[in-house]
Length: 152
Image (cartoon, rainbow, N blue to C red; front, side, top):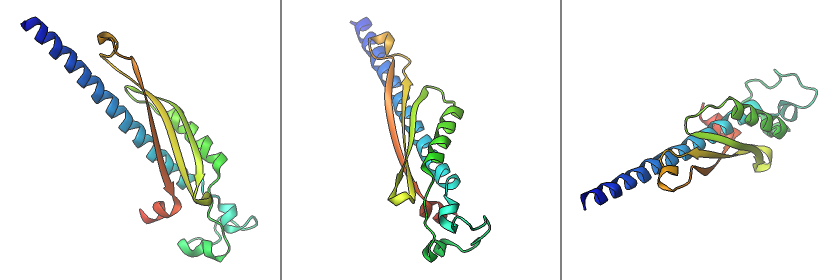
């Protein structure tokens, strides 16, 4: 009787460990998506659309949030955003999480970005107790220029 109880406790412990690893992998992917969205907004602001194609980079410096109301458009360069998130994915190194796909899409008429990431988490005990070896996790995070400006 006692060996059966110990075996059941061992299997339940393995399930608990793998569940914790899966949860932490999903949280890690969510943190990656949030960080990537913030970096995309900061680094892909389309200055030419905001200041005008002929304006220099310093034009309007220090004008603040109201500068867009004088005719400039607040937009993000989506092509540059996707290049950046692919680079962030390539630079990422995590323990049990492998990021398998990441994509940036424009939201709010180009004033924000949504980063969607997909990854796999590698379980430790799942294959040993007849479970799955990997779990697919997904995360989505958004950021806008207003959020970035408000956080400074």
